Length: 343
Image (cartoon, rainbow, N blue to C red; front, side, top):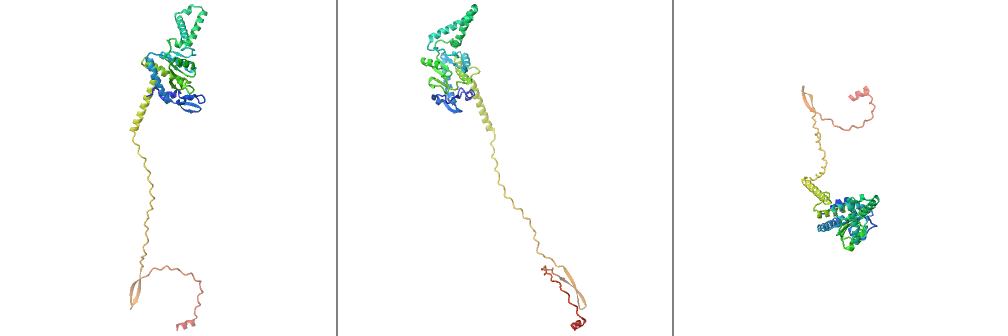
């Protein structure tokens, strides 16, 4: 498991580099992509380098050696001072005093003068002087504190340098390279990775990003020096986030197992063809079996009257002929003609 989570790096903006027109081609292997004219660093590589640097710092400090924190740009001053003081390491957060490493004899004299003035002020010597002399010594003490306050307790040369913005702290890098002192540096996309022995690809301009890298080095020092991590350690925070994410994944898997398997959606049955309307039996009228009404007729045979039943067939429907034009009735026969016909 990585010491630092990707979420922490993303929240601090470690992945943002410089504009694409301000880059060092040697940093191409640490660049993931570019977006809106800005290079984006590969955080997967950054997490691996953080693990490597943590192991180196832990081994170095466990041997009783020291690391000098260097960061003079405005964004880095507070983070360098606070984190170096917390872990008990020397630091430079103002202008780099030229020759701090290579001209050690002269620097040692200035540091001894600083210690002397500190002691005089604690003993109340400044109060015994006139205002003019006291002000003169106070101004001198303030100037020495500004330039050498962080290295007042440094004996000899440091065993390693942690540098914020390798390009800006070029004097410190050159002096360390002359003396063969290992350099741990934050590399932005405009830096030369060959100047650094232990690389930390990341944003060296954002305050949160700088503070995160300073906390990583300080927590590694405290773990090796005192055997414990502070409650607000970035390593503890990363472990808690990893544990929470693991629990969430486990809970999600359990919920998925408990959920019954989703039943397949019923396939819509094809609509049955519309049934033909039932044919209502139509009663065909039976063949007319009409019974002709019986009629009785009376016949007189031999003086006796006999009733005989006769049937009359129903009248047949025959087309009636067209009406003939009415003709005038014939004239009645005269009595003489009637007598002739009777004869």
